[in-house]
Image (cartoon, rainbow, N blue to C red; front, side):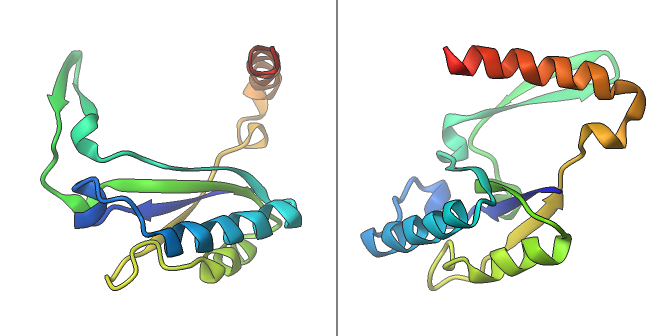
Length: 139
């Protein structure tokens, strides 16, 4: 089962404040533990939303909203994609994480990722797309 562990943004992350060396070391150690356990698929920090945009869909109309965005608590500062045996195991890994924003209240949201098995009629098509993506990233 794949899960995304989502780190919510903070005022500092949205202001572009880089994590402390201590936090970077702790996160590096945590990431290494997940790699050694064979659960980490990917993980990245995201730049402040001021460097991003949103595309809004309203019926057939599409519009672009340029950053910055007002609601920091709704924004994402980073994520880990993990593959584990259960939601509880994903929760256990999140509990082992260093606090993403030391000294502040923060949270890591855990969401299960849909897999091809959730869409049986699309499973073969999904596999073909994954193979194509893998070919592109290998070369």
